[in-house]
Image 1 (cartoon, rainbow, N blue to C red):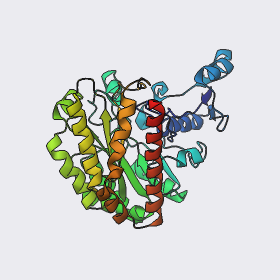
Image 2: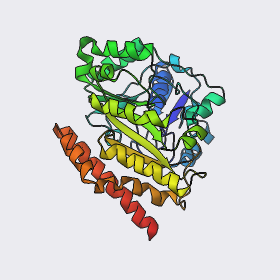
Image 3: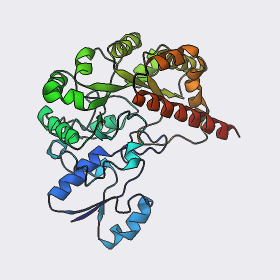
Length: 356
């Protein structure tokens, strides 16, 4: 069988807010699996020249030459049967993956310890959709993930971000951290992950080599958190994020704007809270998206597009810059901050273009 994986800035995304090149770990695992099975696999045959999916379909699939795989809905193998990606074959060092803004140390890449979030209830998330439609949540063994970590270290990678909907917790996390401390893995590669703002042993995670923790804050209003089924209490969010920062982790907060049921005052509550976390240095970085169902793009005429840049006005606060400068301890910290400044400028430019 011949398989074609046409790549795009949407392959790995759960929300279609704007195009972002992210190493598609799940697809790369599947492509590696198929190749290991003896199939002919073409991974991004055009090496950067990307056609629309319809073009690929017309060129190859209709003629029966290739089966086209462009998203993880097409993966028909249990997650736990997939190998970790062959990153030489899947071009893991390609500069478009390395340009991903949340990497601090390069080269870097994505991996997946689990196919779906262990919480799996948030109304806006694609993982909830998959669980509700029968896809089972599966988590790789710690031993298998360590094989991948060792492979990354051997190939010179300095950072890896786990793109599971939420990183596994409980005994799995304890065992993962224990294994990361063995053979100085924690000194050789930095780890990032998605995580709910829950109480964990953050000292243990820091010692295991964790750096970047992406935390879904989403809203400052408990009513909204209940509607979108986040399963978290707003009163606990600040102390848990601060606890991450206090041990040296770098929380990255995500929030959403334009919930259709919220008042302007409720919207402002979230914006003020987002800026508070960044201003105080509890959160180190953040991003904002427009509330939408999973795998859909926001209406380009939506007022949400003009609201997003308002969240980044935190840069106007001297306290924010004081904490930013205080956090600079190496060259990578400086270049990481510079990339963040560029992204804020781009958001305000988009707002300007929307106005005119």
